Image: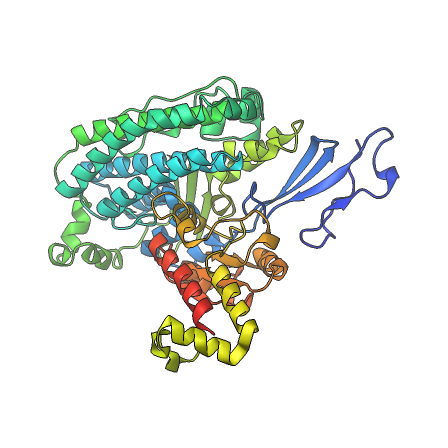
Length: 407
Length: 168
């Protein structure tokens, strides 16, 4: 089918028909649907779908509705306030999405987090991974019109948010890791809350599994839909559960262990089918794996400081002022000139920060590659050849989160 | 409403208030009162997610906070809704869609601007691709926070409801 002229001349929201018959080959029908950005099955992303009858022939994404210029703003801000800026990319996954920046900054500043801080980072990262996966499952369910898993997913997510608030200080945007350590120590209260949360999750998650994955309607909507084989997924650069759902055994936590992942080893979860169901099953297994990792990290949590010793030495007010004293020490630090890389496995895939540091407090350039951005192309490729009704099912199986993708 | 009216109780009880409304507006006033009461308990936001504050909006309609008990329920279409929840940053690209969705919504309509970004920019203050919400649509209530907690959002919905019935 010859593609109709790309409809950029259209006013927002107009859905139009191909009026001139000569635009499409004889015997074929064509219509271009504009899906989003105000659409219950596609949040803040616009999709131009060329459909032939009910079958999607071509999809072109129009991202950038949440592009807030994080990379440019980072060039104007000193490094100690970059964390809260970058975490806004994916606020329910904030410890994970900030970690690559922290790794790059630690390399540039010559800092090394103490073992306890590394374990605490792992605990918070895995906790928010559970929350993000539950979020994706819940939103996927509501996209399919199945509201019970939405309610259950967000109910469990709320418990996680409250525990996050207890440990890190805020429900969503806690900016928990800082260069050279973490913001707060795990108190006895926080530890008890975390342990009772894990017990609660383990008690409730089997019900969620039965409700969502054993549901015949969900099975019919997801199985065999949006198939992406391993070769194609690698070619298109899919990351995270989208890649592992296609049968590729790649997880940054295992391939390039950072922080405490060298000691607390995660098991990479892989599904072979490559359809929407496989991607969600990978998420599900990772939730269970994360619970195991948190338990293991809690068991072997080392004692000691939570911030780098050299920072503590230059921040004599730390004992009195808490974290504010550390920030006083940051002001005196200057990064070494050079190019630094941070690469971690966030909940939706590999997140990368490339930091071009100069000896000034503000970075010369910061490049931030987020997992959802990498998953955009695989997502639209997976939609081709399926029905219009499958678009939301495929969309959310990739866990596409526009603020994360557009940065 | 004027500030002299206070919180509505200053005008006396329900009976005297009704009496005043009938004396001033007759049946029309009464019908208006009923319509306002109806709107108060059916504030339906359209599904327009503008930025990451949508995460907390999800929790708002989840089981723990359950905004549906205030009559607020997300609607798929703009034409079925009357409460525009601006969820965080509005970028230049999104601004025209926010305006367009707002214009499609039937009267009476209300706007809650959520989060520091919608107020003035928050952590993205000075970005080349964002506008404050008040430059795009008339805002009724602001909610502070980055992101605001669901409790704060419930408070904002209550605020819209309160002003709806008390502006008589």
